[in-house]
Amino acid sequence: AAKTQERNTYRFYTPLMHADARMRLMLGADLRQALMRDEFYLVFQPSVELRSGRIVAVEALLRWRHPERGELMPDEFIPLAESLGLIRRIDAWTMRAVCSQIRQWDQAKLPPMRVALNASAATFGHPGFIDSVKHALQTSQISPKRLMFEITESAILRLGEATEQTMHALHALGIGIAIDDFGTGYSSLAYLKLSGIDFLKIDRSFIKDLPDSTNDMAIVEAMLAIAKSLDICTIAEGIETAAQHEYLLRAGCIEGQGYYYSRGLPASEIERMLSPNPRHETSRLRLVPPKY
Ligand code: C2E
Ligand code: MG
Ligand code: MG
Ligand code: MG
Image 1 (tube, rainbow, N blue to C red):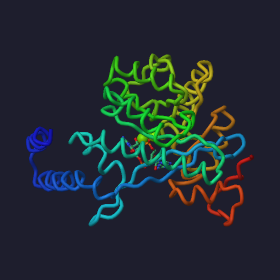
Image 2 (spheres, helix red, strand yellow):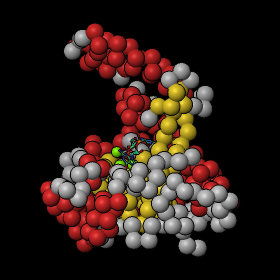
Image 3 (cartoon, protein in one colour):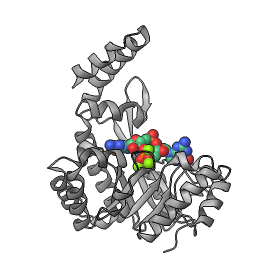
């Protein structure tokens, strides 16, 4: 796969791209080592119930602490991991890490919130996927109800028939499913009737110009209406302002994520924020504490 990738890059040769291809090659080699060297870690972004301001879930987001380049974001290495065939092992690491994190939070007596994780098409479509999920659940002894997988429209499209089987199996296990970045792919409303879809995450691109863009308002309101009538919970991504929060609340969106509430935080900070006896004030967050 690396070879094809390289050839494709060289076909449109420019000196700049040459440097880029070299960079990718080097980064790819490092990526193969990253799991063994334990260089990945997770941050968790709260998902807030708009009406109450309570944190009802967190989304696990992957980070790579590169020995020379410092902290790398998923956009800088997930596509590479996908093209090198490494994503399944990385997603498996994420799943194990999330399950053991849930167990630790349970032991620390945090309120039992949902934890979402992202899975690439290769992961979701692999025949061994469901067995590995079952295994992770067994090892960590957590309830499947605590987990939610996020999958993008383009991944659903790429997988075709396999998607339906995987979703069915996850649903049967009691695990939640969200369509991620909704509206950016070949948005087909047909996806929404696939069994087991519990959440629809409206992509940030539709949120960023709210509440000024009447076009985006119309699109978002249509998405909210169809989700509601199909009994699918809605989550708006990338809320950055109070005006966006107010608008989405009034439009009937159920949950929101974004820098307005919080960025991705280390597990310890989530724990401090939600612990029944908070020892520290979390002044950075505009959140009311969760009810118990
Ligand atoms: P996503 O699932 O759509 O995650 C949301 C992304 O938007 C995150 O970027 C998050 O930090 C960012 N974000 C959240 N709120 C705001 C906001 O208010 N404003 C702006 N500008 N951005 C916001 P991040 O962490 O860089 O992740 C990028 C993508 O990488 C994710 O998009 C997800 O598709 C993928 N990803 C993350 N972790 C994993 C993983 O473990 N496995 C796989 N396969 N993909 C992952
Ligand atoms: Mg996501
Ligand atoms: Mg998303
Ligand atoms: Mg995204």
